[in-house]
Amino acid sequence: MAGTEGLESFESAYNALIDGFLKHADQVALVTPTPFERPVSEFLPDISHHNPSLARYVRATKKIAAERGLHFVDLFSDARSGLTENGMHLREDSLQHVSETIAAKLGFETPSWDRLATLHAAVVEKQRLWFDYWRPANWKLLHGDDSTRRFTRSSHGYLSFREEWLQLVGLIEKAEERVWTVAGGGRDPGHRRPEPEVLFGHPDADIEAELASFSVPDGLEVNLFASEADGLTNPIAIRWDTAGRAYVTVTTTYPHVFPGDVPNDKIIVLEDADRDGVAERSTVFADGLNIPTAMELGDGGVYVGQSSELLFLKDTDGDGRADSRRVLLSGFGTGDTHQTVNSFTWSPGGELYMGQGDGIESRVETPWGSADLYQSGFFRLRPRRLQMHPLLDDFMGPRQSLGRCVR
Image 1 (tube, rainbow, N blue to C red):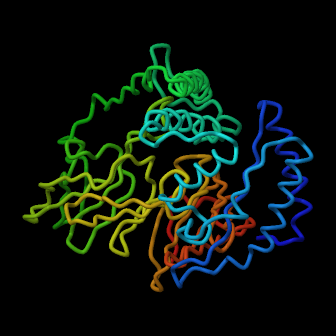
Image 2: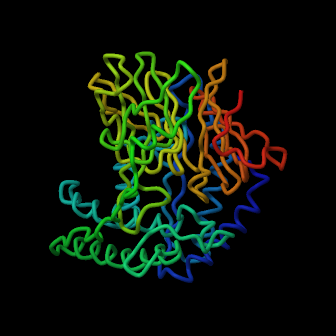
Image 3: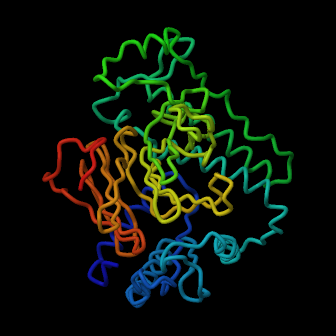
């Protein structure tokens, strides 16, 4: 979207990136973007007018591939229409077509998708581990001022995050071996994940003693509304709907995914039907989440901030569980997981505001361009337009916007 004036710097940066790849890879393939498209929604911008400029970048990429003897895959020149959902990001049902196109242009014969199911699962598992290694949550614990902080208890004491993180190397190697075994027609050895982290509660926890310790004004009292027995493991955010139900995000993943484990944080819905101050019903609205630090109800569903993503979850059949899940935007920073995107709140004009802490760097790709915030500050999102504005950046913002909301 920078136009032709950005072409020279693009070529220089792309060649530098390739130099880095060739230190580790025997072969490199350059894959172009698909064309920008006119979106179906009238609220989104028509970014298809960028295609003449994008065509110049495609030609530059092709030239670089030819000069350096690299594979080249052109997804731009003869692409079919209707690949994207917002003009730039691929639809879920377009992924098969695009992957088959890449395989064909690289000279591979694509088997039936039924035969690829096991291989696909193996590749996804390896990619999940690689993502956790290459873009780790809490990277400031690896390279910043918190490198001595320890979270996980082991038989040898508490491990530092660097010790945990390095365990991923061996897991990735095993996952890679699995991919090639399955691809070669061998028997699938399975994911071979390590035993999950053992979670524990404090042995001195005493509900009655806790309740007795409160001092409250006359006429008020404190009681236990819900507990771990209702699924409330480490609650983070809470919202109430118009029916009086409490939506609570909970985590067992925090502060980051245990090496090899699969995050399974949840949104729990608690209902006090008889209005006695105690929840009688607990329903898992959504699971499979990764440290959901923010939540807000709206537009018939739930907006959720988790890790690098902004999700929209919706219950379409009325059973109390989200059966629709969309990634609206991604690219939020995870440099310090307790400072990730948080504190959702609606403005009177229907804009969704959110904060991030000072250990976070976000680069959120939208149809309007990249919305970047490299320190503590706030975002303003216009959901129907998928338009984000970073606010209070450039050292104008608060020292720490963790847990704060704006109006």
